[in-house]
Length: 381
Ligand code: UD1
Image (tube, protein in one colour):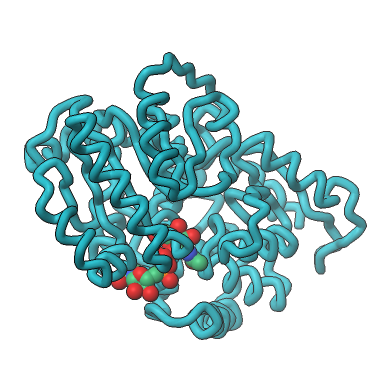
């Protein structure tokens, strides 16, 4: 039996981990044993526990309870906690997702102990070094043994960074390996698409119907921590709601909620507008149902951009750039940054155009693919 440690910390990682845990249980139960470590980066019930409950993810064996802190302190606590776990119990490899501070901490702790790193969602680049996520993903990729890229673009990024002809070897004498595994989020969107409809009645609760609303989220620190940028986004939402006579469902990340409290004028307008439905963070099932029935999605989240594409919905990307260039190349999404006029124009353009959604994110069997490659790698380590 090969033992692996999966590290999660932030909301999207918990969701991705569900797909892998499901595949371990269904297909690899006699070969792989998975334990989960939660760093505690996200700790509110509706940012963490709700996903474990809903998707029946095994409870974490380890919880570091690091909570919110500055990046340095938060990451340092995680490194120290993960190091302790890896020193106490022998794991053949560590599985890390995406680009959060939890990913970075796992990469540093594991690499110093020569524990092979399996990076899921490798190779993504925004080329914007002001994003904490860009720093985290570059470091993690450099330290990983197996890199599972979700798209061809991610593979190309890694090749450009010299992975294909790198001479660097790990403690086991092997070079890193790169694979296009497709997107593990797609596994979940397909798997839960029907179940989610049966298990929630979010449309009724919010008094909305298929196609009569836009779904919006804003949480990136670049947007929430700058009052001008945040106000501009909310002004665009207010204008779209009124001029296009459309509801806007806005599940609000805790950080954004706090930032909005500091903008009383715009906050008041948002709260008073009956078309804007400001709600606390929602479960994954509720999110899937909203995505399936929305007319359009407006977001600065990477995950939501892709889920929009999975469910064939146009997406206004409230960022200056995206790692998911397939979406903009396909004209299924438009980059607007936080520019109010561009957001409104993009709404008009995207709701009028005919868009096709070829399968650029794989076929929804990423978890099995990843486990197969991982098992073979570790068996012959
Ligand atoms: C993190 C990731 C980001 C990912 C996002 C998903 C990093 C650098 N960023 O951003 O890539 O897209 O998760 O949500 O790791 N807070 C709560 N309750 C919680 C969690 C957070 O109130 O359960 C508040 C705290 O005030 C905290 C702030 O949100 O300071 C930001 O949380 P943090 O985990 O640092 O980053 P995210 O913005 O969530």
